[in-house]
Amino acid sequence: MSSPVPPPTTADAPADRPADRPADGSPRPVHVACIMDGNGRWARRRGLPRTAGHTEGEENLAALVRVAVTRDVGWLTVFGFSTENWVRPRTEVRHILGLHKKLFGRVAELNELNVRIEWMGRPFDSPDARTPKYVQQAIRKAIHDTRQNTGMVLTVAFDYGSRAELVHAADQARRAGETISEQTISQHLYVPDLPPVDVLVRTSGELRISNFMLWQIVGARVYFTDRPWPEFDAAELDRALALVRR
Image (cartoon, rainbow, N blue to C red):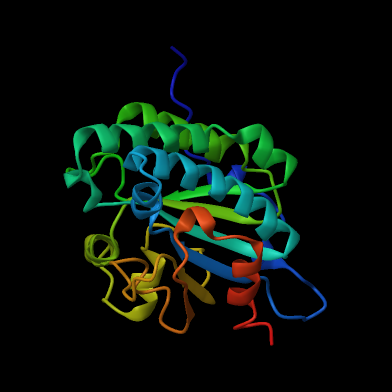
C-alpha cells in the first residue's frame, strides 16, 4: 500500500487562485455552498434503497461541478457528511464513505476542469475525528494532486459540523494566546482562506441550515428548492446564482 500523501504546504499552493482574480476590479467569483439533501427520499419514491439515492447524488455532484465551472463559480462548497451522520445505519455509512473515496479519486477529471479540491472537517488528529484512514488517504491525495489548479475550488465538508468548527477555532486562538475576536476566529477556521458564502442552496424542501457553515453564511442569500439533490440541475443552479447576479 502506498504511503500517505501529506497535506500541501504553503510552498505547494498555486500562485493564482480565484480569490486573487480578476485584476480588472470586477466582482470576485461567486461562492456557492450546497446542503445536498434528499438522496434517501429520491430513492424511496422509486422503490430503491437509500444507498441508490446516495450513489445518484454523488454522480449528480460530479455533473454539477462541470456546470459550476461553466458558470464561472469561484468556489463550490458541499456538505458531504456531517458529524451527526455517523449515527445512521452502518451499511449506509459504509456506502457513503465509499462514495466519498470515489469522489476524492476523480483527480483526472478535476485536473481536466482545472478544479482544485479542498476539505474541511474535524482534523484527523482530533480526539473526536472519525474519518477512516482510507478516506483520509484519498482526501490527502486529492488535495495534493490538484494543488496547482487555478480554477474553481471544490471544498467538501466531511465529518463536519459548524459548532465543532467554531469550538476548534476558539480553542486554537486560546492556545496561541490570542484575544478571541472575529478576526482570530476567522483565522482559525478549518479553511481560513475560504471566502464568505454568497449563495447557500438547500435542496429537498427542508427550510433549515443543519449546522453548516454558520460563520461563513452570515451575509449569504439562501435558495431553497423542493427538488431532491439528485435532481438539482443546471437550471436550478442558474436560479440560485440569479440571487446575486441580477
